[in-house]
Image (tube, rainbow, N blue to C red; front, side, top):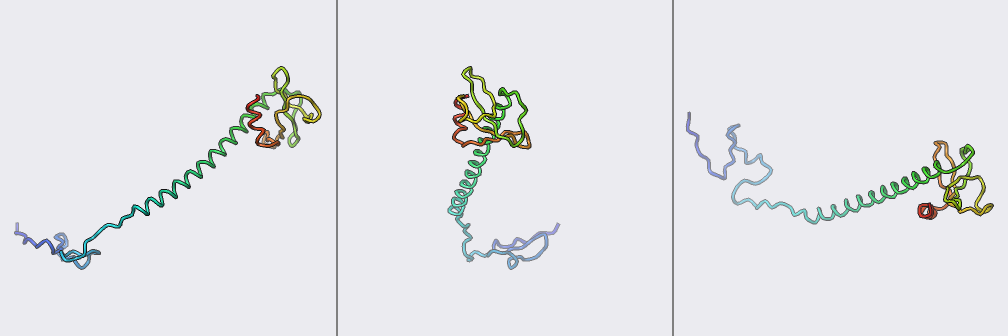
Length: 147
């Protein structure tokens, strides 16, 4: 084996290609070159982490609200399908949910101002056979509390 000549540390020599590569590198290689200092990205990272966290929190809150609405819809659909009624509901018609003194829940076409039963909410059956609440959202809480 031939003896390799040792090059000084400042010389950039690639032994695989047998070429001097100092001029090809994107950074200075000699001892008098300016110091390479990495950029401090702490401020940039903190700013963007804050933005990302805010966006994720906003999306989470939106999903949480959608989930709560879906669960409320699920609960009152279960309640209505489990209620007493002796007629076949018609899609698009308005029906009213009441609670008897005995505690039983029933569905009726009679509006709340025409009877003395404990009113629980007004609903309409849609094309997908899902009950859609017609009265205000504040009554959703009342519906859950009293049933």
